[in-house]
Structures are given as C-alpha cells and as structure tokens.
Length: 92
Image (cartoon, rainbow, N blue to C red; front, side):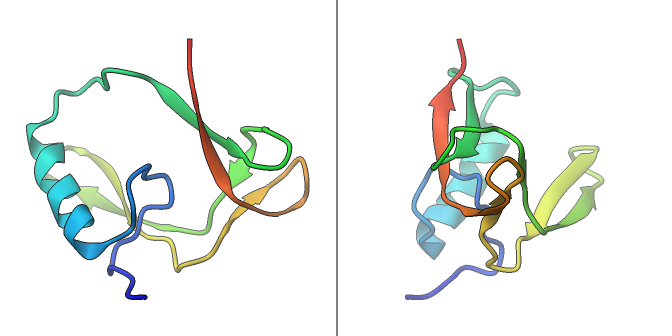
C-alpha cells in the first residue's frame, strides 16, 4: 500500500494518491462552505475531543493554515485516552 506525501486523516475520501490529487484540484474550485457539514469523532466513544500530531503550512494564496503532514500517526481520543479510528458524523 502506498501513502501519499500529504495524507489528511480528516479526509472522508480514500487515501489513494490519485484521489488526493483530484481532491486538491476540486478544493480550488469548491465554494468556501461545504454543502453538508460534518464533524470527526472517535469511533469508540463518539467524542469529538480528538488530537492529531501534524504540521501546518501557511498558504499565501488562501491566507490560512493548511495541513501539511500528519506523520501517518493515528488520531488520539482524549476521552478514551487512546488511539482511535475517526468516524464522520453529520452536523444538524
């Protein structure tokens, strides 16, 4: 299994390099607001108190911080106090 250089664990799409390139292209065309809102939660306890080791990089074009790298580490749930899988739940 190959991993792309910049893997976003909060992406709801598969982590294939082609999908990542396609997603980046779509991000430039996508409106600022998502059509449906969602939130990442712990797959075990459904808490949204998640921490992830990551590096952010400033984008001069977007004028915001962007996720640059997550070091292929799992998310950590502060409620369970252990590594966890991320599940996406819709927001009302």
